[in-house]
Image (cartoon, rainbow, N blue to C red; front, top):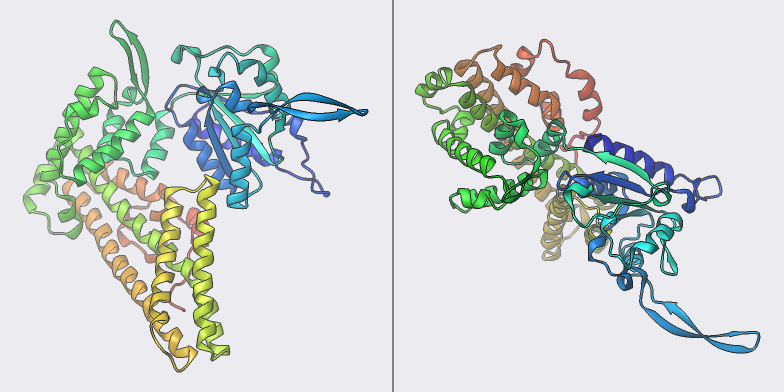
Amino acid sequence: MNIKEAKLYIEDSIKMYLKKDEDGEYRIPIERQRPIFLLGAPGIGKTAIMEQIAADLNIAIVSYSMTHHTRQSALGLPFIAHKEFDGVEYDVSEYTMSEIIASIYDVMRNSDIREGILFLDEINCVSETLAPSMLQFLQYKVFGRHKVPEGWVIVTAGNPPEYNKSVRDFDVVTLDRMKIMEVEADYSTWKEYAKAKELHPAIISFLDINKDYFYSVETTVKGKNYITARGWEDLSEMIKLYEESGLSVKQTLIEQYLRNDKVVREFSAYYDIYKKYQSIYNVNEILSGTINDSIYGKAKSAPLDERMSVMSMLINEVCHRIKENIFYSDVLRDCLVPLKAIKNDSEENNDVSVIVDKLIKITDARRESLLKLESSGALSTKVKKHNKLVINILSECVNVVKTKEYTSSKECFSDIKDIFDSKTALYKDSTVKVKEELHNAFMFVEKAFSDNGNEMLLLMTELTVIDECVIFITKYGSDDYNRHNQDMMLSNKSDDLLKRISDIDNL
């Protein structure tokens, strides 16, 4: 199966393991909850999907690489305990709590989340001294003398032996205590993830042309040649930082992430050409509608790879701007709930101190909630950014009302509303601009290529499959999209997504 299918199966398994009966007991006892064993090549996203699953299910996650653990750190350190049996004292060997189990309790205490995933990577590479204890762990969820807390599901991962010399084969007795999922690298599945994460468009367009270069591991006379999904993602982040800093992306940088000479040379050459296209086809000018007329002729006569590169740059940028607009809309909507509560208080209570104190408490509670989410280990970058922006807006309101003296609570709320209205005005300006940029993107494709060509099909497809684009077009409209949307049905998807949209004008 591919990594996307594995994610769905794991989510379903965790949901089943966490089901309770009417007495609050887990339907499947912990001893019968088979740990999941995710077996697949390195760098295909096994760890990444576990963090996504924890975030999706609102549970915590504790991750460990088992290659870093000795018997002592995993099982605990021995010590002598004094006990008495039938009036006779004995010295008995006991163990301190396992570092792994202790980490679970730390997360539960800091996050207030009682259920989660214990993710143990490279489980089939444990040290020789630790290997005998793994059967007991997989069967009874015990490290040393301490059990994994109830409500924590065990997911393990490992590489097949052809990728790792340290791999030890599990015997049938051990394998029979796990749910085994074999995962293979799949470009089309990874591409969905890459586009959602907004990986560098040069990488995505290069791999669209050279899908065989997405993932490979080869043994040569010089050693191992390998390219992994992790390598492409890490390279993307570094390229973005280099570009932001005005540094040149050279082959010596690329080969630090892609360990295959042929692919390094070809991607390096492609990236140089891609940068050349960026300078010729200025995306900012296309979206602002100020592109030079001569560029249309150049695009029309361009070879296929050039046209696809131009479309990659254009689609990446217009979708990014739409995503940013919808993201900020979600932030403003999230601010509405506490601000509406304060508005109601200001209408019912004329004590300004009550209003100010409530705003401070709401802001502090939101900040504390974010700290707890971070402690759970399942907080995505996007959710973290969202929460920080909400806290920043609420904090700005706090800073204003704390420094002024008011004669009424309504006067106090008026200042709060002014701050929110200023943020809303910026959002509305952004919306008008993004809508015009989307129109200009359509105009460029129509004029430079063809109304019904592959380029227009590519633009329409991306606008149809990306949730934020569907929300934006459904809410604000696009005559250009509707004109070209003869065979694609937007309405079914938009009905569900529109439920996420609230009016931010009625504070």
